[in-house]
Amino acid sequence: MEKLKYERPIINKLQAGMPDKFGMNIGVKVISNIDGIPVSEIIDTYGSPTFVLSEQTIRDTFQEANEAFTTRYPKVQFAWSYKTNYLNAVCKIYHDEGSWAEVVSGFEYDKAIGNGVKGSNIIFNGPDKSDKDLEKAIENDSFIHIDHFDELYSLIKITSKSNKKAKVAIRVNMDTGIYPQWDRFGFNYENGDAWKVLNKIMLADHLELVGLHTHIGTYILTPNAYGVAASKLSELAVRVYRKFNHIVSYIDMGGGFASDNTLKGAYLPGKDTCPSFDDYAESITNALINSEIPPENLPTLILETGRALIDDAGYLVGTVLANKRLVSSRRATIIDIGINLLFTSFWYEHEIYPVKQVSEQTEDTTIYGPLCMNIDVVRSAVKFPLLQKGDHVIIPRVGAYNMTQWMQFITLRPNIVLIDTDKKMHIIREKETNETFNTQERLPKHLS
Ligand SMILES: *Cc1c(COP(=O)(O)O)cnc(C)c1O
Image (cartoon, rainbow, N blue to C red; front, side):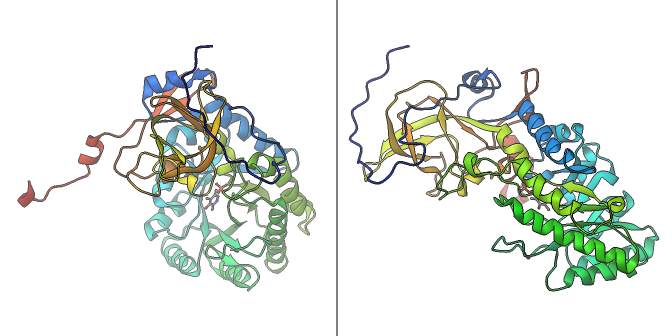
């Protein structure tokens, strides 16, 4: 081991009270590579910072989730939630594993078609579907999940002109014991709106009711809530069958399974508190199998899992820019990864690690990003060793939402690299350049 740099001694305040269940913090964990490729090599090749995705982890996690459901229920279909990560390469991996596409905008719909997904394998969710979007989805036999009565009436108007039937489902919101309740999407179960819209659909000449859908929230830590939701949707399916002798062909339970990230304010790490795919599967499939739906009519179970499938496959690798002492004497470390790339740092305590062995001594540190903006805090308090300017860091579990919700503020978005299952690296999205932005801008004549 090479000789370590001298560090001045630190006096740490003794925190009174109990250590957590893992005892006191000892040692500094290091993550030196991703799927066997050294982080330093990734940064040397693609720059700093860089987003990295592991194809192996994507596929392994998908297969684990799929198995949890298919071992418990006869008809299971996953649909990849595009908004969680809609890089074409990522979507293609899920489609290759057998996933359909779940989209929430016209933009995402076109992306799915562009990725070669058959129209009849696309689920179209969300409150904003233009008449043009709806016409396209009807033409392609996609599943349209109706969000509000205005959308229902648009569909009735559009289909009355074309004579082609639209395949529709409704999104249902309900009390599952999770509060605050997500009631802004779809039709409420308890107040009767869901039943009301089902009756209207059944009476509409050109609408074919194919499914029932819910998405009860995100990062849901109680599998039982899904059981409650699945029971309520089953009950609606039974009522439709009794009144109209019509079989609903699928029940779509949406997404929302938690990933292993740790929520801000949580006492225990996410890894210890997040239910497994088996836990969710057990709750959902029991509710369906134990419902009043006759076995020969059991619907296909659709899952739109996003976060829990991809979070673990994503990493951010970056570099220390500087260290500082704040006026309060607190140590601050500034890195080149900010909230522009790490939107999820608003609700997660993201883990951050050095990529090579450094000092064993840690100090309560605030990790700042590079933005000239006070809220650019990656971690407000983390026991961290002293890294030097130029040292690399890695932030694991960033695969969900960061590559779609990132913002272009005062700097450019970096390369995204995929490590394939043969451990080869591929750029799957080029870093932006000034050119990227200049092609979009126009100067009025009097200013040019
Ligand atoms: C966002 C979303 C998902 C995916 O949610 P996760 O929490 O990432 O699993 C699935 N379905 C719908 C309708 C969504 O809006």
